Length: 105
Image 1 (cartoon, rainbow, N blue to C red):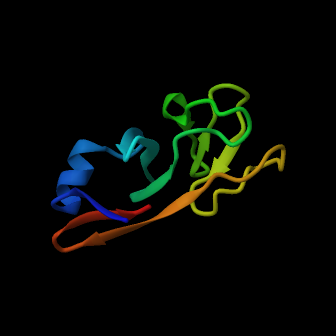
Image 2: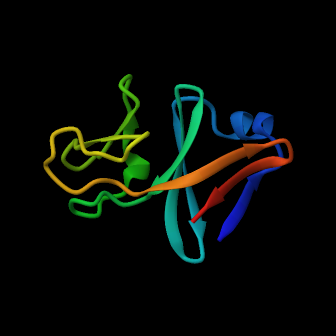
């Protein structure tokens, strides 16, 4: 399923500034839109370890989202957990087009 989130990249940047996380709900499923290092990423909302909400996490300077429960770190480009302590985070396709910002879930 393809979902249009914003009508332009400029609108997306205004609504989700760099270094922030925004929770999305699509068909009763939680996802996160993350803006880090001038790129957008979409990931599952819940940590694969103990299902804590990553919406309450932080983004570090290594382009990782950090789980607030056990501080596991997930690479936003690959989804890999930095220390191999748990499974990887699921990433979703995102496209910035002339008519908007889209995700495929």
